[in-house]
Length: 408
Image (cartoon, rainbow, N blue to C red; front, top):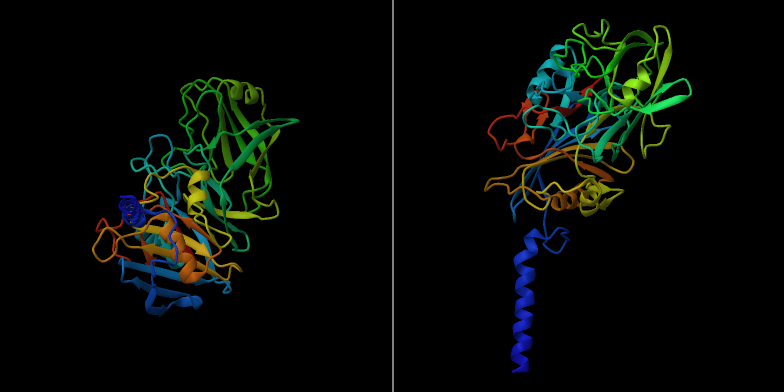
């Protein structure tokens, strides 16, 4: 009888492990996955397009490997329509449209991939976004998520995007709560010319004060800096005649409610104020030019970080499920940058969990850091104007932003 009980116990334990094996968060080499490169296509500037398959699951994967030793290859954030959604104003654009628009402006796009998670209705991105040294949005999530940073030398970094901004008036300072966001109670919000269809006005409710300022000198080309601004106009009533930016490339609107209103309302024309921006956890010597958000620093310093990323950044709900996935990554010496899409939701490719994607990136490319991007129907990889992967929705989804590599 005792032998029977022991035998039954062993069967129960084995059945439990067998039934949950596919959903296990951390996989190992035990399953014996073999990722075979079935086709390699040489691209411009020393880059490559790789078609990778794994037959056991199965998985169908495409990766574009960018040669960062070639100075022509430059990584950029590409905001939808080169603007930011705000309030109830919708802003979305497909990657194909972004590429077409960029190339019409004379830029050569080597590769592109969809970017940050976003509000499906409005197109507002989750994480702070920066392009060419200008903040487009501070994002809509209160919990910091990971992001891709690119400095003024084109070097990539992946870290939490915890934007720290403040307005300095004399020897006093106040936190800036958001850029191009909704102005809530006691909030200080900065509005700039990156608001889509904003008529160069804030659109904030009338219970506050606003100040029009203009930059003194020229922008440094990176965001983590301190800039001086001269006060042009102060509106303490916010009646029907609203402050309007006449030169949105150089001017900002400071909009305050409650305690923030009290902080800015006594400014006068001609005074000089300062705005200081930095990112917590980023070395001050790194001059940040681009910031593209994601959710999940899934490989960190060469290690599978998929569990820790969710613990730090919050649950995505579907991190353990198999879905189409997009990500970017780089190797330890940052000579190679990868844009990767895993197809999913089909019999030809099942999609990956975050852990499986981290496992694949380490096993196939030995990456140092990797960032999970929006996936599912958003997952899109392009070489120039050509869409590379099979799209789970059958067509490209309009998103809040994308990450592109341009040839300079």
